[in-house]
Length: 476
Image (tube, rainbow, N blue to C red; front, side, top):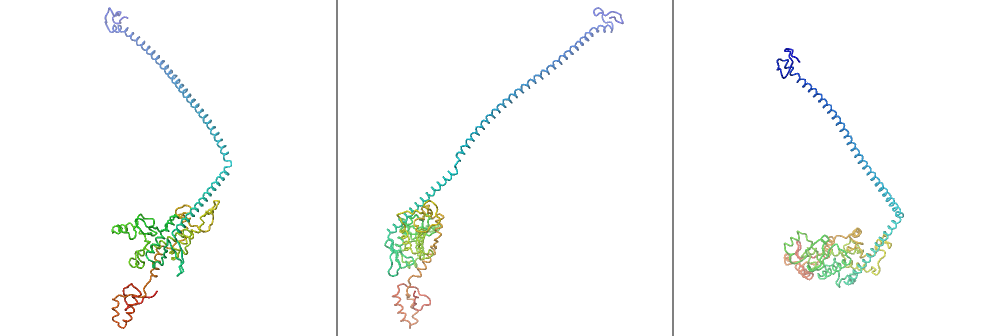
């Protein structure tokens, strides 16, 4: 290209730049190459971009396909699991149905067996109940027979013991009353024992206590008042009151020598409330004992009434009549009550056993009413058929309510004091005659009175105020 200024052709080798046109012309070829390069670059960039867009589109389509395939496989796996679970459920349902059918068959067989067994069950049950009742009635009847045989044995033992001990009844010639003897010694009458000697009283009470213990041992009966026979620690028979019986570990025996007489032992006895048994013996005449030791006298009378109370209670518990249970003299008649007990025991037939036992018929049925009859030896504390501690035994004891031994002892004391012999004349001491010295006219009478009093009585009583010389005691 020619320059417009110099009008020369441009030659890059030969001619240098003379002007801007030459410079422009020298740069034109390079600029064209750059332009071609830029265009080609743009073309190539476009191709690259197009290719990248195509590749990206293809990659997106491929990912979608792969995701779809994965989802398909997951769905297939889940479907397989569901089908397997459904198959298991079908198998379980089938097994459950088989089990239900088996159970139904078993229930049907059990129902059939139960129906077969239930045929006639009511009749069999009624028959078994009848057999059971019959066997129970037979056992009750045999039990009653055994109780009757035991009662006969007890009555026989009591009869033999009393006979061997020598219980006798003899009629007095003077008074017409019966006298009872036990062991060849008379049984004292508590209401008239003030006229007996101490030896006779002690011997009689010892015999009665001994035979009473034997009878209660054979009958297996516990008396209301506990009796203690002579033993190693105490050589005399004693008896406890009702409240102190069978409730003590040790006792303070009357007149016991040794440690019991010490003040410390007495204080211990009072603090522990150790029961004191009543003596069944006496060492002095009753009148002398009443004057010298009123406490021992009261204890002795209480012991006698407790012994009589035991005999009366024993007779009433065995169906032996003692008369009026509220009468003091009937209760205190120990000899008569023991003899009545012997007669009642002897009246039993020891050879046969009563087939009609108390409360039961021979077929085992209960008897609505029964006569009293002779039932000595039945009620006892050592058996269960006629147990005195049962409701029937308690009701039996209530039917013969006896008066309290304390009240009986008071009555006995009053009777003995009222029946005690008193002198018809008083014996006056020397001081009493001093009053008579003031009245010489009555000397003869006084001397006569003194002589009569000396003959009539040997006991002296103190002078009383208001008596002048001598006093005549009212005759009973």
